[in-house]
Each structure stands twice: as structure tokens, then as C-alpha cells.
Amino acid sequence: MSRLDRWFEGMSRESARRVSRRNWLSRFGGVLVGGVALPLLPVARAAEKHTVGEDGVKGREGDPTRCEYWRHCAIDGFLCSCCGGSHTACPPGTEMSPVTWIGTCRNPADGKDYIISYNDCCGKTFCGRCMCNRNEGERPLYHWYRSNDINWCGGAKSQTYSCSTAVVVKTAKEAQPEK
Amino acid sequence: MRLAITVAALLLTTMTARADSYEEHDYSLNCSGCHRMDGSGSSVVPSFHKMPELNGKPGVREYWIQVPGAAQAPLSDARLAALMNWLVQRFTGKRPKPAYTAQEVGQLRMNPLRDPIAKRNELQQAPPR
Image (cartoon, rainbow over all chains, first blue to last red; front, side, top):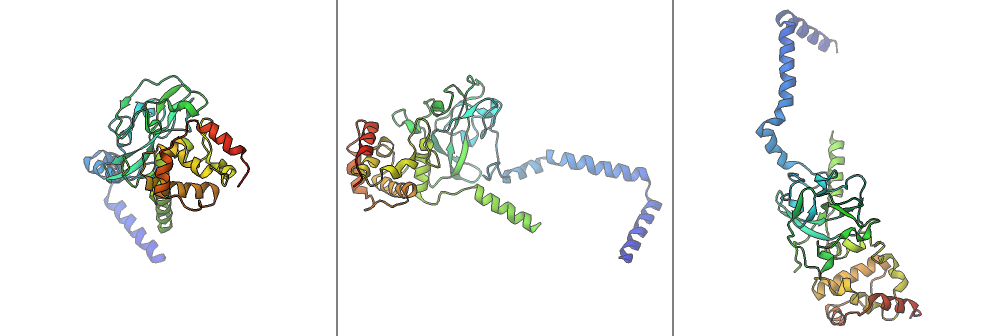
């Protein structure tokens, strides 16, 4: 232990003799600023591809406020991400409908299909922002439990539609339609 | 550190639940939207937890295939038979005897119910077999 102490003492005395305090400050400042700026470089952003989403699904999260976001492949409505909520949570003052329609979407990051639950948020007047209408794999009204043209707020306390979420349920065994 | 990584990996695998069989996949895609993942239903959809009350009564086996949600599901007869065997087992604790076959399911689907709710009330009042 004392050897370690002596070594450190020697090192600090040596550096104190050779290096000025201002020099140390400027170096330390450089490290601080550099560390903050590093994630802004394109190298750091390329590494994002391998992040894990908030519900454990691997792959680039993408932008949940855009219709092109992979989970929105069969959505029809206003994105809750643009309305004070997120793609998995309702905006304050609204309630998530317990009944919903369910489909599959392919995640381009891992090439897998996922079961997506498009729960509507209900209880406030329609949000009106980020209207999306992609409908991939969606069915006509006579297959009502796979149709997005229904007001799925039917099971909630209030039947007033506000916006739609896109929750990943789990990985799918196959993409729609079934074989 | 190693413990933290193990715990994180464990959490990750449990959070990304996997569909193990077609039965579970078909349940998620074709039933769970309205009946919900736990089968409890809602104010507008019947609960699967009430299936034991009907189980064993005459006509119920056929009724469970003829209800619109089952009969009209976009599934082949074989997949629907497998799904219903799994579903009855899950919510009543007993596998249907004999198990549903693709042929039986196919025939029952061709005779849809005119009034599913009236039929359920009628079945409910019947004494157990």
C-alpha cells in the first residue's frame, strides 16, 4: 500500500513541477466538452441502430411521431405521440380502450414480424395532429375485429376518440394474413 | 458488473415475450383484441372466465365453434380446431373430449348462429349433462 502511496505522491509532485494549473484546467475542460460533443458525431449516431426500445424490442427506435415509423404499418388515426402521449401511452386526460384491433408489422431493424395492438385513447375530443392512414394488413368492416374503421373506444368509459397508440404485444409467428 | 448484465439480459428476454405456438399467436391476433390477453373481456365483450359455467352442458361444444368470433376467424379449419382445443383448456382447465378436429370445426362453421346471445341464454338454462 505504501508503495502505491509513494508512487502517486511522486507522480503528483512531478506533474505539479512540470505542468501549470491552467494547462490542467484547459485539458480537463477539453475532455468535458469533447465528451458531450461525441454523441453528435455521425459515428455515435450509427451506433444507435443497436439500441433496445422501451418495450425491449431491438432495433432503431425511429421516429414515433411519423406515419412511416414501422409500428404504424396498419394505423388509421391520429398518433398519440403527437398529442401529448406516446406510441405506448395515452395523453393525460384520456383512457386507453381495453378492446382494440390487432395486426402485425415487420420491424426493418431485425426483419421480424411483431404483433401490434392499436389501442385507441378515449375521453377527449379528437387530437387532429399527425393523421396517418397506412392500413397494411387491415381488413374491411365485415371482418370487424381486424378493421381500423371502427371506433374502438366502444369498450372505454367515454366513446370519444382522441388518438391511437401502437403497442408491441410480442413477436409474431407469421405475418398477416394467416396461411 | 456481471450480475448487472445477467439481470439486464434476463429482464430483456422476459419483456420480449415470444409466441411459442400458433395457438398463442392465433389467440393474440384473432381473439385478444376484444376478449383481451387475459380473456376477461369488457363491458361489450363476453369474458372467457365464464366458460367453466357452460362447459359440459349439451350444445355448448358446438356453440363455442359457431359463435361469430370463432366461426368467422380468418383461420383454416385445422388452425381453428387447434386454437379452440388450446383455448378451452386454458379457460376451463379441461381439454375438450374428444378434441376438436378440422373436420368437425369445418362442419360447424357452415351453420352460423342467427342470434348468439339468445343461444347462450338458452344453453345456460339447460341442466348439466
